[in-house]
Structure formats: C-alpha cells, structure tokens
Image 1 (cartoon, rainbow, N blue to C red):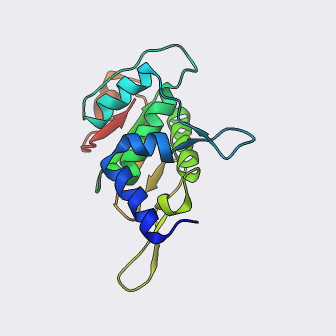
Image 2 (image 1 turned 45 degrees about the vertical axis):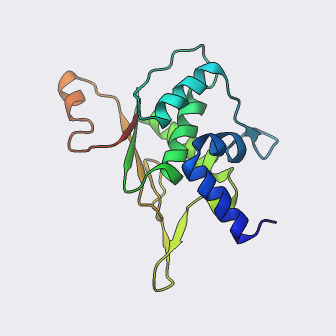
Length: 173
C-alpha cells in the first residue's frame, strides 16, 4: 500500500505530466480484468499531444483503433487534474451516444486508484461534499470541473443554439 506522500507524488506528477497519467495511472476497462494499460500509437499520440497543448484536432483512423479511448482519456485527465472551474462538453450525433461517452469516462475514472477518482471532497467544517453524477453530467467536487452532454442539432437554427452562452475550454465532438 502507498503512503500519503507517495499518493501525493503520483497526483502531482500526473498534474504536471499528462503522459505519466496516461501511461502509468490510467487503465482502460476490459472484461475479465481490472483494466488494461493505454495503448499508445502514432494517431492517438498525435491527437493527445495536440489536446495537451491546447490545439484543436480532428482524428481520422479506422474503426476500433482507439479514437474514443484517446479522447476520453485526455478529457479524464483534464477533468481530474488538468484544469479547474471549467466545463467540458460532449456532443455526439445523438444524446445517447454522448451519454455513452460520459459513461466511458466514469468507467475509466473508476479504474483509477480510489485516491485519484475525485468523487468527494471535505469542506473546512469536515462535511463530505459529493459531486453531481448522473447520466448527462458529472461534477468534480475538488476542482469544480464538470462535464455535460449535448445532442447534435436537427437544424441550422438549433445548431447555433447548442452550447450558446457557454464558454467551455474543451468540447469533444
């Protein structure tokens, strides 16, 4: 078992070095295991490099090669460690698919050691504060980050309204 000092060291290294988080901490849920390590290849390396350096990107590779895994892993790092007081928006062709991506993020989070999950915080009076966690949104009670899901628009007019009034630093389409 790790000491508190070791746990703090792992969290600090993950904050300043997202590659450490991806390669050493993150696990991808897989049936019959406690999770498998993230599989890095040129495409998701490039996508994550751009994401970690605040550059918009669009990844096109064959199906089932890890596009969603990379995007969810990157946004999990941002949600837990990479930013604060921020909102991340997941948009997909339909709300169910966006919600599925949020569910994947929760499963990835739950594959982390318990001390890295940020599901609850303790206020100055010793009260436990739990973050919001439902099908369409999640809130980190420690750093005040949140993730919300949105469906695609059915018209040009509706498209101009999705996300209107919000200024998310991260949007995953």
